[in-house]
Image (cartoon, rainbow, N blue to C red; front, side, top):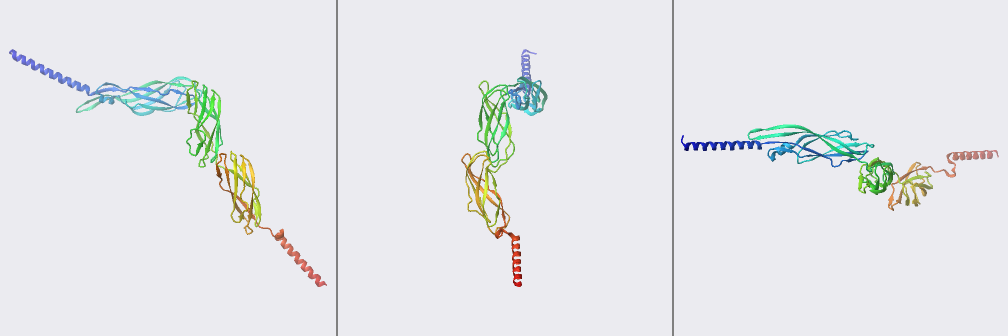
Length: 428
């Protein structure tokens, strides 16, 4: 073999090696690029670690998946970093806390969508303040490896994992409140008061406290939505009064109300305890006036003085009280209006009307009605519904007042007298 041929063969062999190397490198690179691998990486956060004794509250846990992507193209990242069929549970070791919520399924957890998981927990009234540890258990599935090649079914590796995270919870001894000694004068169609005491059952003093009444109940109209109660030391109470007007369409049922307390803590920072609540009764509607007539009978064909006593049933002084009597046949009245200057709560006064009954009236019971116009304590003019009073009409008495038996007796006496006179005349 001459030198020229040997050189050409060497060059050809080098080219082949270069092509093979280049082809093999490309295939290997393509194989590497078509394979993605990784896993979820879940972190746990608690935005509000503080709870107070004697409460049942929502304890919020936040989950954030930061993912671990170890190989492959960025476009395939989500395939191997997303956690699926995620189950979350809150466990208690030695904290004085009762977990009220069972484990929760939250579906998938990707890197781009953090999730919030609420748990209901109960802290006993006698729980010792301090820092405690709870545990979050997270179970999930994921795809740890995906290999994709043209013309080949994707090759996937499925995995499962379980993460445990310790989280801190702090039971504070801040001022906190409960409502006691509730008394309600609320009544349908009237304005009344809710009174009671707010007790500081926490371990710190509260200053500049006020109770709030943010009710949205229909037909209830608070005249004050915030009432100052001053300073409340730990273990002490303060009285409060909330005036409320109850609409005429309200239901006469017990109602539960929230009573948040706003106060300044020992550092002068404004705080709010949203937990206090209470139950108050709403009494049924009642007549503004109690009405009682002294005499409820009248004789047909006569006129009588009708005496009616009016009693103020409200918890306020009423003024310019104008009763008016309304009559229908067989009754009539020449004096059907009265006037009472004022009535204090529970006070009574009697008004006299004239009432006449027709002589032809059939003896039985008939109604008369009375309306009352008045002014309430705010100076608003009001008018009551009609009050119906039953009156009995009696038969008219016979002339001379002897009645039917007296008439028969007089007739007998007359006959005897005539008969006796006739006998005497015959004897003569």
